[in-house]
Length: 111
Image 1 (cartoon, rainbow, N blue to C red):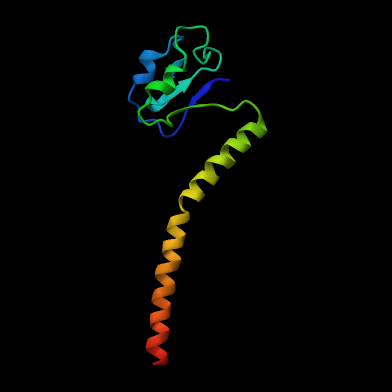
Image 2: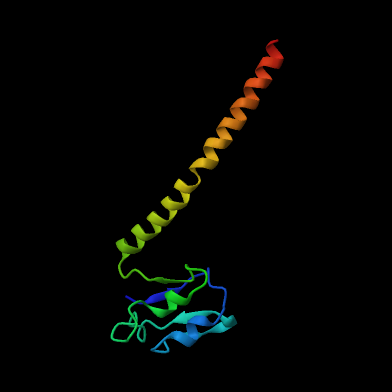
């Protein structure tokens, strides 16, 4: 399973210099692309982790590309779910704030 460059890439060029297989190429508009035929996930090298992911300053600029449909679907689902659960505090604060404002407005109109 090869890695892919995501939209989180900031074009820092660090991954270009560390790839032992020279699998990362610069394509149109300066965007990076990992050739899946050349990428070996750094297996068979002295590295224990894929170097493109290890040096990425954004942490999400280079991610493992799922190979089958369901694996991609669940990866996307888990990513969306993680974003939604992080926003739980936001919705609780929103509800608390607006319910308090609404209660104050009701007291003003009834009093």
